[in-house]
Image 1: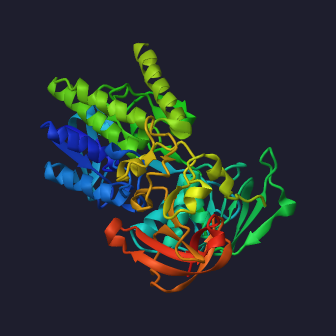
Image 2: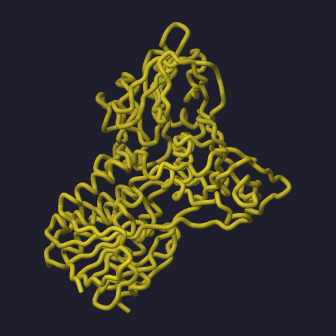
Image 3: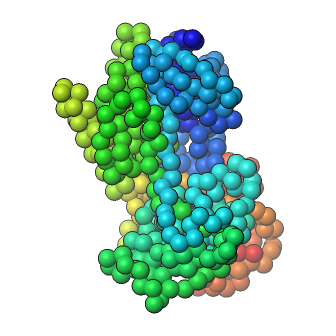
Length: 363
Length: 160
């Protein structure tokens, strides 16, 4: 069995940042990713990121992805692609299917950075070809350069729904509308304004009734809802679309953390059930760390900082060295980002998570 | 069905919208950013220190309209594509607006275009007057187009 000092599962922004930090400090790192290229969702983020200079604000996600990947290679990180971790067993033995073959790797420390998964939304006709997650559509248009439909209905007006609608316009699609069940949009007004000024309608207090079509999407029936979100079917109308994208939130992708025996809690502002972790990103199972969306859905900017924090904390554990100052700086940058109407709730949720970690680890 | 309407009054209420007097003086940045987003590259990029976000970075950017020369550096860096430069005095009859433009194919200088308001409604005809190619600003093209002056507070985009 192969033995590694640190194994990182997931090569997105959090995993790459964790790997770079650990390599900088001389730890042997194996980074595994199920895809054929690391970078997670960064390479489909063709838009500029918010933030400050330290957060690489104004830089496109795709550029950040390239920088991180180059840095990970420069620091000679061992990377296994097309490799899926299916379980973490006693003494941190990790089961991995690498290029179709089973491999066991024993790690002294593990960082889980598996990201998030799109939430589904069930409605009549939702299994028809032409109904897909907005993130999946974004991968198709921005990574594979395939436009999966020409006339689009977007369900959900969070930032994902708004940004992907804009990117669909860039890809040459006609976005017939965005529908939102709440009386106000979920994402930033600047993102809504970007599509509004090119004529995309954003329907509030409205929902999807049905995806029309026999063998594929040929239309979408939508209708307004009342104050208790009950569809007002008398006012329904059918719009001519061949693609329906679902952007109704993300959930942490954390099955492997369950399997490894980590304790969980429910935090709605972090996307659902999340593994408890302390201020060093360590879970209730000693030696297993988390970072990024799988520890609570936020943004790429926070995922990168959490990745660094988890990477440094893993080094501390392995080398019995202290990096308090560096960790404090990262925590400060994280808190700088977790402010405002959108970020404050996540900061509080993260604090509760850490508090609950200490309460439950005692018992 | 109830639709989201983008109303210019929400930007004017924020106070950092240039005054009527300043708008009519010549090129100036219009920052249509009203939410507490943790973001400040507009402040960092401004060579005249005319934009202030300060601390915390969720503050809404404030424009010092006297310091702003309308150079347009902030247009391309804004991740929200929320900054425009208006030149009310493009000529005696026309105003011009510079916007970030991220669509292909790019229009040509002198091309006739359809000017749109914040909600994408057609307002009037216009003409492309200048184009800073995408490679100058990390893949964001800056396009300046002209249109009848009276629409200076209305027009925010165009289509071919």
